[in-house]
Length: 284
Length: 278
Image (cartoon, rainbow over all chains, first blue to last red; front, side):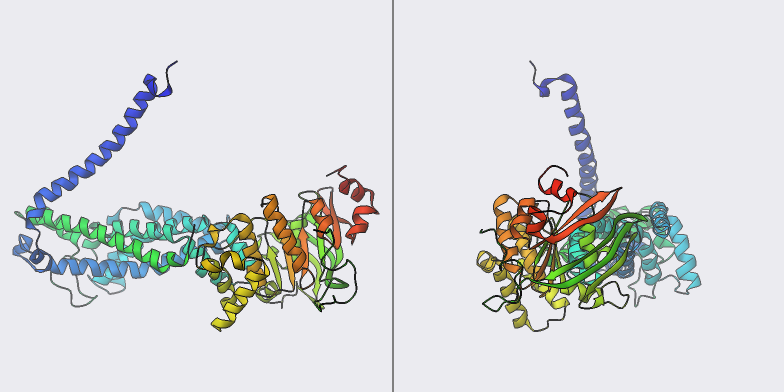
């Protein structure tokens, strides 16, 4: 008798899944190694705070970092309340199988697949031109909010749907209002899904180039207000590697900063979601 | 357990200690109650009086509408899409189905315990504190007193006093169910609806909860759905037997539980309580 692990098919299968996982990890490691190798040398405190010089070939990325964070802040500030509200409506208020809810979900799923360049053109038409916000951090942030919403909503909705019905009935039987049940029990229980959605959304927003070129523009000065144009990191990297000869080294360094920033912000978002909502939830 | 209810069954008036007791006065008057889901009737034409301070057991086979009946009493049926309830449930003279009725206040007066313990994923303390706060008990010391009283009332205080801030979901099943009962009690309801409160518990925990139900009777009117006929016989003062005819649940017999178990008037009841059907 041969044990299961020694059968040829079984062994082949085991090798195949290990190889697949290994290949994925290797691609990521390679990318990271490439970035570090080419960009780490340029990294320094002054690179992070200085203004770019000579179209970005020299100097740092200080104003660009500020613009990136501002755009992201606008996007989150707009997307979070809207997304949370829509997810709560879909999961808690819309009747099961209602036509309105089905349409909203369909719209969100289509939106999630729309190429970012289309969002850019739409954001330009709506925010920059029609609403008169021009090329500004506000336009860019709001456009990103539109892009992030589908991810945020669907992920939060799924989290809410996974909250056991027992708690809703229990809360109702105690004479708690729906708002109280949501605030104290249901939303905190769905916090992990909310923060996962938020992180996916932030990832998408931070990596965005096409949607921002048309909305927040690529002026690399330090923005004076949300109505100023500002260049996001991803746009800066694109600009350096495509349009500025001799900008590759700084493009690599900027990409490295972008990855690091993404990790830091995701960690922060997870921490905040846990603090804000998860703190009150205690599971065994 | 002696096999008798908290006060001798069917006594009129109060116990010697002065606590209110099971009295044959209606606390809830139910008239011609019918429930349908999406137009499909599940319960029709139920009428009975739930006596004040007594334990009334609802018995009968699964699917004959006992849980639906229970949920209609505190209007939890409002939450179920497509559920329509017709008839009258009078509580102190007012119909609970009246459009003017504040359901949140109603459910504060009529608490409910579910089959599966459902403590919120909060700490033990916050499970009781949050409903109190939401019902406008602003003073912290009052809330703390009421939390302690409720936990003592279900015999949980000594077990959890050292770890009130520990997660409620870390308690055992029986403790969780008692916590849920405490959570209902902390709002000082007049009536407690219990939907098979022991069926998800092991025999020991079940006995503890059963004893607790006996202690709560008198001060609270209790309506309990149970599939455990022995339990119904042990604790109930009154019993209602539901049966399904042509896919619709109906009340077959209602009366003092001794009569219903020992000298049922209806042949269906006799067959069910003797284990010959159902």
